[in-house]
Amino acid sequence: FTLVVEWARACGLVRSAGIDCSPPLCGGELHALILKLLHLHNPIPPLMEPLSYDEMSYTTIDSNALGSYLFSFFFSGAKLNSDFDFIWPVKSTPRHFLTAATCKLFATECQRM
Image 1: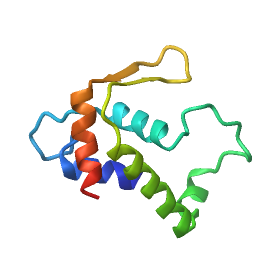
Image 2 (image 1 turned 135 degrees about the vertical axis):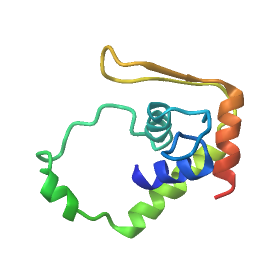
Image 3 (image 1 turned 120 degrees about the vertical axis):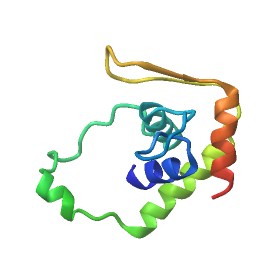
């Protein structure tokens, strides 16, 4: 998530500290896009106990897997051209709706990658 969020901030898609702009996406909308584009939007039962904060800082992901996730995200994002509607799988959380125009702006930035 961190790499994609930093990319979106650099592109001006999401608010970033020190930059005075009105971005088209809020953080929650970007996270919803990430989950949807990577097909992670369905609740997945945990395969192991959650890691502690100390364990997380030392956890690494295989570089091939990371590259595959990034490729999939940008490839799928580049094809986004219609309204986007995301309902979180948790009750009482906000629904995220993005217009086709916002999705096309997002797709344009993904195509640049």
